[in-house]
Image (cartoon, rainbow, N blue to C red):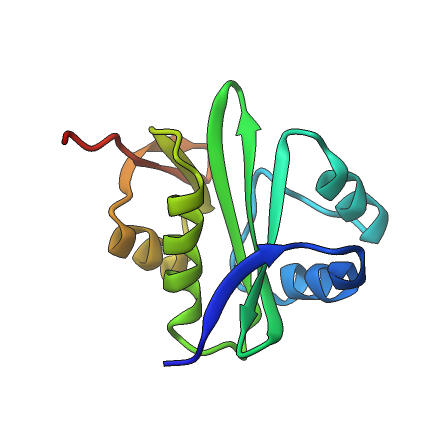
Length: 142
């Protein structure tokens, strides 16, 4: 398995991050970027934490968490040429960093790969928001 890690997104990463988001097959209903400027504005928001997904020292995607209507929600975009393990491992690492539960994710109803990745981590369907499916990672009892 390749080495996969999340690290802070730097200014030098922004071009590659924007390209990864645009190339990703995942739809981000909560993060729509019409151009590079709107992407930069989103990255700079105080309620958004953006991480570079790095596979074997090459940036291959973006993992983020943001506030949506008082809840914490995660977003993931991985370049199509990344190894198959990258989305699941990046999501696992992101959920470890985001301690708040419940934790939500919203994906397009027709984004089957994203549904599969969320289910592998333990997210369950919470409801529908128009053409999107909202998932939740509920709190665990210890």
